[in-house]
Image (cartoon, rainbow, N blue to C red; front, side, top):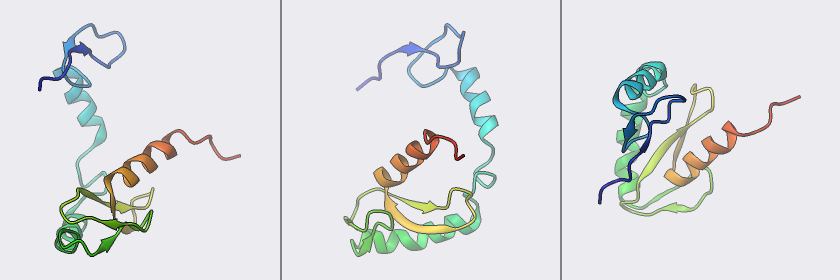
Length: 110
């Protein structure tokens, strides 16, 4: 199924794309994000994810966030602390990504 066309997400860019950004602005976005290692997904993270993947595939691991069982074959994320210094453990993709979205919209602490 083809994705719907839309205007590039970069303010002021009139390019039509099927992605979030047109190709030049997608490259700009990716460059600003940094490498996977800079974002906290380096060798150690990848090794731990690979180890957890075997157990998650067996359907014996609970999501560290909601405590529900991650079903065998269900996509998962290896969650980490907001500052990316600690790996918390496997979690449902929805739990991980909704938590990230919520924290991005939290009001600043006073």
